[in-house]
Image (cartoon, rainbow, N blue to C red; front, top):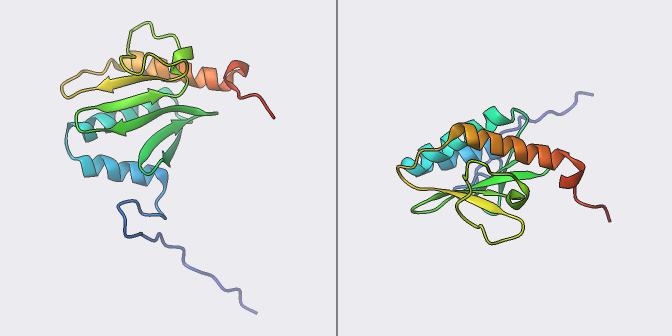
Length: 147
């Protein structure tokens, strides 16, 4: 008896977010959809994150937020009208000698970097911050306690 095979194709939903698309494809679509300085900034940040950690995993959460993870969340890439916000999940636990964190400074856990139109990203410092976040995630200090 011959085995039935199916041709797997990606299905698109009626929304902007195709449910069959991979997170990377959804991030690509977001960048293209923005088609302005925010898209360019998000694309550049994405490249820097991947350069800093070639093993990074891209995710798509909370109905449209790019997330980069490695042994836990590293950061998100949120886009708003006047800012691209990179929120580091464990930012309060990271050293930031270059002073990149400029937003969400009051909490005990997260820290964020708000990038506005015309801002220049300190690429070396951002990569160092991503590497530090990965190091924290992969260390015993970065692991969540078990049940």
